[in-house]
Amino acid sequence: MKIITYGAHDDELTYMTQWQARTGHTLDIHKAPATVANLAWAAGYDGINLLQTTPVTRAMFERIAKLGIRYVTIRNVGTDNIDLTAARELGVHLANVPAYSPNAIAEFAVTATLTLLRRLGESQAALNAGDYLQATKFIGRELAQQTVGVIGAGRIGREAIRLFAAFGAKVLAYDPHPVQDASLACRYVDLPALLAQSTVVDLHVPGIAANDHLIDAAALQAMPQGALLINTARGNLVDTQALIAALESGHIGGAGIDTYENESANLLALHDQGRFEDAQWERLRALPNVLLTPHIAYHTETAVQNMVDFSLNYLVEFLTTGSTATEVLPR
Image (tube, rainbow, N blue to C red; front, side, top):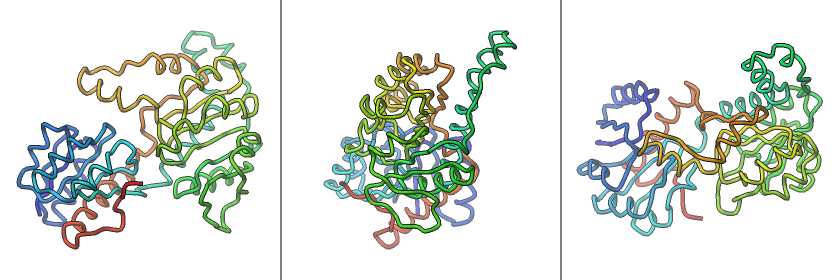
């Protein structure tokens, strides 16, 4: 089979060449993300494999369908940037990798929480300013003394619950479709109760339209004074302007943001102009009680290999049988 892959990162290349050698399939690897123009490269290929944080639009699916390609897989979870309705209408089937390493993202959420609880950013800022004495004055909080509210108890959320509980934290969980798992040391509550009681709120829900600005000004105000917000899920879950206001007022004690609300637009600009420029990003970056990272919570060796291997295996399954268990349908 002949497969073309777009958006290949340097750390994926070894796993891609290993997969090609192991399976005997032809894999044409491109670092550029897919665009309407460069999808012409896919002519003559059986399937397309993507890693795409920028939009996959109707126009792109029209080009794919015109090439006679019916199967696409993505190497990541999120599909909120993909026009699934257009894909379905044009006869293109798409599958994602719903679980490449839940533990990687859950570990990162805990890492961000510990960084903020111990006020390491504030201490580091003082050291960078040459004020050693001030750097010793930021008294921290212990995770074991916190109530952590995990919003979204899917694969990643459940791993986060296990890790937070292992540190001794009291864990609350909210999920509209809770999985009953006796091994989870948490108590399911409704969302208002979780927000009101949690000194750390950790997000692990999909970026579907229904979850847009799930954490808005009212939700932030409902959280206890000094609470922390952690978002390693999707950028649209948080109203960034409201978060900045809550941080600058002191009501929210800190935030760990790995997925940023304006990420897609700015990544397009980064690709075109070589710069990531955003006024809200700069305001967040200036706050020492904010940990900003560039969508890297997933980024471990285990996760990257699984993203490559699983997505390519799903594409072969698509091409061989016409279906795969991870196919994503329009909502």
